[in-house]
Image 1: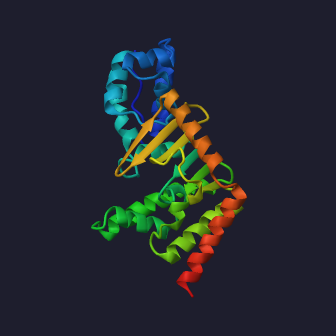
Image 2: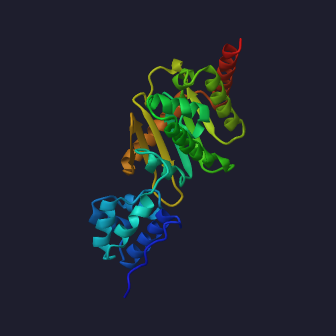
Image 3: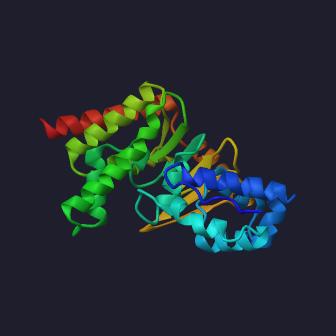
Length: 279
């Protein structure tokens, strides 16, 4: 009996690869947990591979072929699903964003990517790499702006961002850039496209002072949490870790200003930046 045909890389390879994995697993009579045990991963990880929210790495493709007897199918096709238009090490999280039904994020020191303007993104990327060629920065900014097109849909995904006031007061790119960036955030809020709250400096110590976090929920896959640091990032699917970080986010919301007061602060700071730029 012939094995499955190779996938067409032009036809959403990650989703097709995940669908094939689900089909073969069910044909073998295995649950996600049972297959995960054979690969020394969680059942939720298998679910994310099947839903296309996680990329299939070559080592897992090899193990899947061995566990399922698929004659090298997943090894042959995992390369197509690994192609990404986003820069490392953030590409897997950026691709998971495109599948998310809800995104909850805390940003302590900068405006997060989905809320950025081109000028703000340019300033951030230039700060990340002061010696990069202009063409390289242009590519990074283009990739960042492509991510923001997720918000072109009027309701999906749900985006809930908690910003630290420090991110709003850090003059990234100059006052004109900051004024534009804050007006853009206020516009998203006023169009009911994003929920944005601000943890004020007056709140003092809070539960997430050590760093940023992003929680992503999916319609047909277990949730993920993403940790980001200096030139590094990590996706985590452990249910206990995700639950713990969801509690951290809930505590942040409790420490933040209300949506109305947050919007008033954002718009007031935008006015301040505008007036100080043009006295």
